[in-house]
Amino acid sequence: MLAMSKWFTLTPFMSNRFSKRVGFSNSPGSVRAHVNGGGDDTNNSKNNDKKKKKKVVVVGSGWAGLGAAHHLCKQGFDVTVLDGGDGIGSPDNVGIQGFWYPYKNIFSLVDELAIKPFTSWTRSAQYSGEGLEVEFPVYQELPQLPTPLGTLYHTQFVRLPLVDRLTSLPLIAAGKLYQDIFGPLLQVGLFAPAEQCSAAATLGLLYYLTLAHQKHFDVAFCRGTTKQKIFEPWVESLKAKGCEMLEDKKVTDFNFDEETGCVTEVVCGNETYCVDAVVVAVGITTLQETIKKSAALCKREEFLKVLNLAGIDVVTVKLWLDRKVAIPNPSNACAGFDDLFGCTIFDLNVIHDEHKDDTETVLEADFYHANELLPLNDELVTEKVISYLSKYINDLESACVVAKEIGRFPKRLTHFFPGSYKYMMRGSTSFPNLFMAGDWIITRHGSWLQEKSYVTGLEAANRVIDYLEEGSFAKVIPVEEDEPHIEALRSLNRRLNEIISQVPLSSYFLQ
Image (cartoon, rainbow, N blue to C red; front, side, top):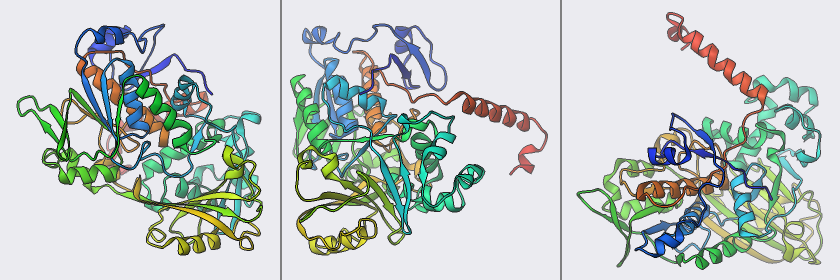
């Protein structure tokens, strides 16, 4: 889908060993290096066969876990993936997921696996409690304008005039643009009402997907479930490389050497797995359950802080109707039912191959922050969902539901609530050989959602390689650089701050 870039990011955890191998020295922040032919992914496999392979256990089988396992297997390590019982792909196998233009690392993986899981770039729409607000075109097909003008000009704002859009830039976090456009977008992007999301997460997601570059909001979907189209062929590829996939293995503790501080065994009930290194790539709720059971983790401050984090409930509703009902767009984000939860409605007759020739409508609605739907039985959930969706889909109430599938996922998604950053973990831990990955792990890469999960998996693999001093580092494609005018404004802002900081008493008057 996108060609693999030769440019990649050297993140600050890399040792001097890594710097010397690529011919650069580390400096604070991210350093970009260009390597021609360096780091063949399989160049260490034959050498490792001649000696005992180092054992790495990866806990979790979502984008982060499989991402780490994928690269470590190619480097010749003995890799075992432990799935906690929620199925391969957990915690990233919930609902219908979009894949946005800047997901360069995921698109590179898909090319490497030689699979074609995605639809073409897809139009979408957004609704508030008052009705249709925005229709999003395929931005790549339109004239490219400097950011953020292209996003504001080409987007079809149904009830917000062009002059209001352009004059609202200084007040982007206030007024009608925020209430009716960005608010609902955040409710389905960060899975909670905007006021319950941190400012850092809000600005980070908005900039990454909508403001950094005009084409970044272009989105494609899997032509079936993510598990079917990506995770299953990916797992088969890993197995072919010697990776052991063990399902229904809940981690309960870690044994470690008191002298070195290194983890020596991963404990799953009565079973133990010897390790040279560990990657933990699970969701917040799963890790919290492990911390409470683990004698090793519950004594470490960095893990105890995780107990302050929170997850978000998700309910997925797939409905088969007895007739064709016109759904406005393949993907429709909705918010404002009662200011509590948001949802996305998908026309599966358009998105999924298996439903393209169906004579009846098949749709899915994924509800986020769905606390009030979670305890209801299937009939009540269906009744409420039909009532909600009828506000946006004409003739839905006149159709009959002939079949349904309801999925309930308590605390499955990450809640980036105000103040949550200080409780989140970094990729390295106080255990020298235990590393973390996932969409809630702190990283300097700049990506979000599935792309962030996958990137942190690659970064965790690099930390393992750095620690064990074997193998070649994974190439992580960096986020696209800012456009020149944005970078110029950033430089100007930094310079102004430097000048202001030198003015006597400036910090007092600018508090």
